[in-house]
Structures are given as C-alpha cells and as structure tokens.
Length: 509
Image (cartoon, rainbow, N blue to C red; front, side, top):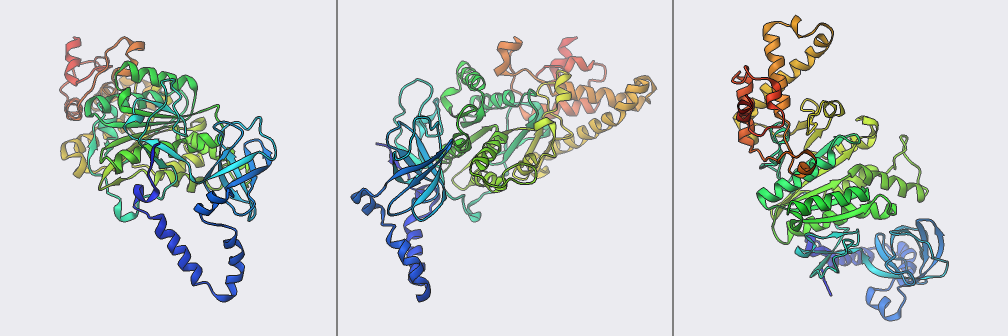
C-alpha cells in the first residue's frame, strides 16, 4: 500500500494545526453566534467516527451529465474531496459545491453512463491522491496516476495530494541561472532561466508540440534532467507520437507523462495539470532534483474550465470565458516556482485561437510567464524552423544573467532584424536594388541571422533525414557576432540554412 504524503509533508503545512486553529476560533465565538454554528458542528463528526459509524456513505440524488449531486445524511464533505461511486468501477467524483448542509454537487471525472439515483457514494475524507516517485518515470498515466500504457501496474511507494497551497512568499527563490536547450533561436533570443516559466505561443500547426518534444530530448540527453509532461486536451495521435519519439530517442525513462486526452470529461482534463505539477513537486521538494515541467496545452486547460463552469450553471464573463479563469490559472502557476530545495522550470505550449493575441485567455497566461516565445505562421511558411519570431518574443533576463557578450550581441542582432523588417515594404515595391549600400548589407546580414537560427531536430530525423544537432549557447553567440561584424558577407544566406555552428556555412562552398 503506497504511503500517503500528507499536505504538511509536501508544503510544511500542518493540517493538525489548521484544525486546532478552527477549534480555537469556535471557542472564541460569541455566545449569540454559538447557537448558529452548534447545529452544523454536531452533524460533522471527525473522520474516525465517520468511519466507525459508516456515515461516510451518501447516495446520488441527481445526475446531469458530468454533474452529480450526492446527499449525505449526517455531514457534508469538504470542497475538493474525492468521492468513490460504489457500483461503478474507478468512477471518481470531486466535490465542487455545497448545495446544503447535506448535499454536495460533484464533477464526474469519467463518463456517468450506467449511474442511477440512489447509488451509494463513499467519501474518501481527503482530496485526490496520486502516486509519485521514481517509478512514475517512463510511464504514461491518467489524472489518477493509473497507467494507460498497458505496461502493468505502478508499484509506487508514496502518494501525494493534488490540491495543496502554493509555497509561501518567503520560500520562493528568484531564478538567476540559464538552462541551455541546444536550440539556437531559443538560447540566443529567449534563453530559459532555471525555475522560470516559458510559454510557446502560436496557432495551429506552427510547431509548438514539436518544439516541446525537442527540448525534452535535449535537456534530458545533455543534462540528465528529470521531466514531467502534462498533456491537457491532447489528441490521441499526439500522445502516441510523443511516446514513440521519446522511446526511439532513448529519453523516455527520464520522463513521466500524464495525459488528459481530448475525449475525456472536462473535469479530468481540468485536473491533469495538477497531477503533473504534483509529480514535479515531488522531485523538487523531496529529492532536491531539478525538474522540467512541460504542459501542452495550457489553453485547453482554460477551455476545460469553461466547460465545467457552463455545466455548473455559472455566469460567464463578457468574453465567454469562465469568471474564475484567472484564479484557476493562478492555482497552477503559483505552485510552479523555485524553492531552496530545488527548482521547477515550466515550459507551456499555448494555442492562440485564430492567431489573436488579444484573446483574454492569452492575456491571462502572459502575466505569469518570464519568457514568451512567439511562433509565427508567416515565418513557418518560409520554412524557417523553429518558427520563432524574435521581434515578438521577449525575456526578462538582463546582462547580469546573460553575460555582457551575449547581451550586446542580442541588442545588435535585434537592431538589424528591426531595420530589415522596416525595409520589407520598400523591398516588396521597389526591390533591393533601390536600397543604399548600407541598407543592402543590413538586409543580407538579417537574412543570414534568420537562416542561421534554423536547425535540424533530433526528434524530426525520421521526417527530414537530417541528423539533429545540439548547439552550445556560446557557439551561437559567437556565430551571430561574426555575422554582424561582416565575417560571412561573401556567403549566401542559404548557406546558413539548417546548419549547426556558423562555421559550417563556409563548408558548403
């Protein structure tokens, strides 16, 4: 039987102290208020008494699709408590609302077909716990931590609750160290900081999932980093491709995968990120290891929340999203932080509906990120992969973290690319021949920088037949500096397409 990690073990928060605080407040209640609370308290015995008297059993009184109402005769379970339906195998309900002193409204985590009124439901007395630990690496599980890869059961030693408070402000550590990904466009324009949050923004088909998969491969192979992948609203095909790619590249053993597929009930998709975060927190807090948390796609988490809000009958916001969107997003993002015990670095793919970056959901996600990587459809159509738009992307890093050489090269490269973009309308109308000599040089160097940022992926070798390449950040900075200083002015920009280090361009001659 797996050992349960109580909430106080994970976040140093004692539930016993919390209960004592509640009891203290009850003792301090004014005489006039005592009568109002006494009746409810008498109907809510402690967990030991509930188990002994078998009063933790309630019965279903209403079923409305994914929403199930359950009546308990003597008490009401806490919000977020997990309830087990007795006559339906593996059906878990999560308490969402208190309708009265005896009735709760729950969200079904899986299909409710076959349920009927009067079915007994057991209150587990706690929130959903999932297995954690080293044995979760190399496996694919659902939101409950149950394996879905047909490789047998997982004999995990411990379990942990998916609902816990975020670390206190004084325990959060500011990130100051860069994580190298081996991808030139990322490491040069938008470097990742250890313990930070990175978002890949883009519409459908611009390469978000492919980029996430490549980063998992590179960080695992080069740094041996533990990784957790949370697939929220993933297509079955995407999950299969991810699994096969990681297996073929021999990095699956260092990655734990949690999938809440697109066909699952919204409650399951909605809680998938929490399960993934819980696995990542285990490696951070209890093993002291650095861990990378990948969430694909965080926008579908918001969509699942909107579905839940609708079925619960809540009034949506003016734009159609749930009114609780920001708080729900914050519940996840505030747990993805660095602490003295370790760091969780999060990489989140964000689908941009209709390529509209003014969408309220996209704006809500923006506010939580340290680094924003924008993937452009226009750039992807030019066969520039990864399709990173360096002028639309941003990072919070400064020269003290990047180093003076990288910082100056980044400023100069950005200036060249901005000048090239401002000249594109003139070029489209009059052609490059109408530009001054200085402008022609700027345009050619900008094209070289753009092509230099392309590179073959390890995880795409089977499609491109080009061996993948890992480029160190210092080599990328050196290559960009040489392009800006005119060392490669005699070369064509095509010589820089899909190469590794800049010197490889000279070998194409």
